[in-house]
Image (cartoon, rainbow, N blue to C red):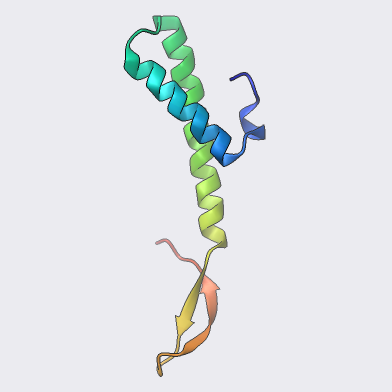
Length: 79
């Protein structure tokens, strides 16, 4: 758990975040440890969200022409 968050892959960050959530939900974690886990979990959550946003930005949508046939691709627009 001491690995720098910026060096974690998305999958590694998600696994660690899931572990933190499990520990916090158990209710057996001393307060100081729970605070430390919560803080790391918050950073891990942001890392995962950033990685998902980057992946989403790379997705391309197929444009369809008036005749219903593919007419090209355009960048994905989540908005």
